[in-house]
Image 1 (cartoon, one colour):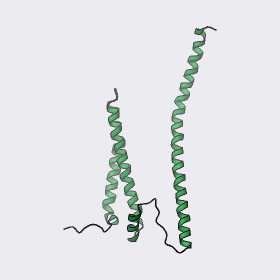
Image 2: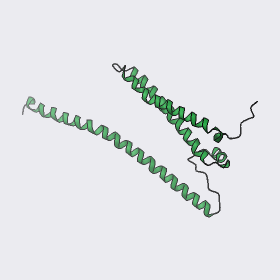
Image 3: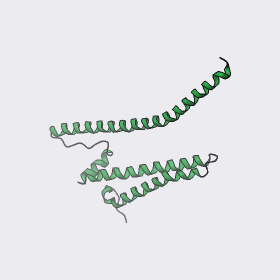
Image 4: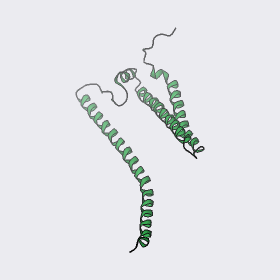
Length: 163
């Protein structure tokens, strides 16, 4: 077997591997994302089960139901629960989720815009960075509107009197 007669075999083998890699990389990314999502949901469920077990034991012993640690810090949770409006905790958590998501999306949009602006031949592609950036701005606006509309819920009563 001479070298020229063997070369077509190696060329076809490498093209098969390349096409297989082109299929496995996106599938690997999807599997990785699915594992992360399922894992986070499983751990969140385990935390809820532990809290329910703690609340059940507390009720059996005549103690008050403890605040959930994953909702807020302890002082703010006590203040919001003392107001008699337990929905205030979920509203506060919702506003913080909007704000966090908005800031992350704006940061991703800025990073993409800067990264694509410096790539040769991608001058028009950098405008696709506006998609996550504008989603982030919308989330920030929704978070601010929520905080404004439910501002009496978030008042802690510790503010000095305004003159």
